[in-house]
Picture 1 (cartoon, rainbow, N blue to C red):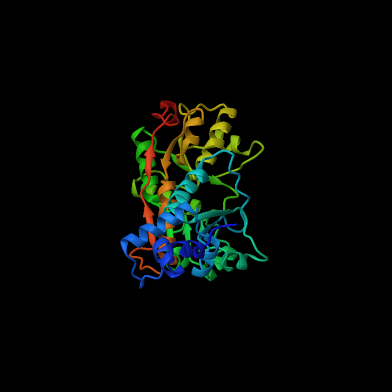
Picture 2: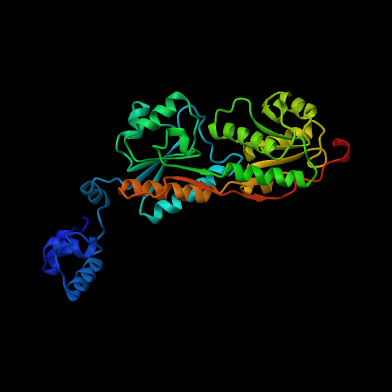
Length: 343
């Protein structure tokens, strides 16, 4: 049978309140001498006393659990396939959550009898929503959530500034990519996202990309944005027909597909076509050629989201609840100077 606080108190000849003060820093109005405190700790160790976390959390009305949600309308996240995006993001979330003494539950789909219940039924102290497919249903769930909530990949304007957000500096990241490509002689640069893509930040990146082209005096037209036709021969045909000599993709996963299809289309990367991805995890080093990519600081973003969430859980003031984290840029093998025949 598990040793209780009352058992420790009885052996130490003190009240359970005194034991609580020493072992759990509760009952702060109770004064305990250093000698008594040391005797209680020694007895607790000898008796192999362990905190009943469930009982403590019930008393404190906390679960010490953070839920990580993918949202409504997305395919289930496969953790073992392709891009290391999710693993890097979760490293940041889990490490920071453990720093605060929290556990993390990943919800590949919303739990409960209905989505509204799943995000506000009290099973978690707070929630991190890491995707922003801003369908009406997702927006409604986020805005009406009763639990503390932080959304990753959203900017301040998404929810009228009412929901704390974490996002990378897309403008800075794309600017670095475009500067890198123009430095190699490229002027006809395109941005690629999947034709079926509804991920709001990917669409935002397309607009930012076009704005930067205009700012830098580079050619910008409808053909600057490629909606990739994944499957059959659609993407290969698009790659053969594009006027662009360099492409920037909305994710490293899509860039990997482009590399594969470009080879099937008879295009050499980077000799005939330079490709830049977005995320820059270890996945990029396993591609052939290795993928040059905008480095989205996923671990820092996950960590920052937990900091924002814990501040909400504890009703602490937030000096800035909309964080924009700078991007890096990693040059590998998938970009090179422009082929003279392509100018």
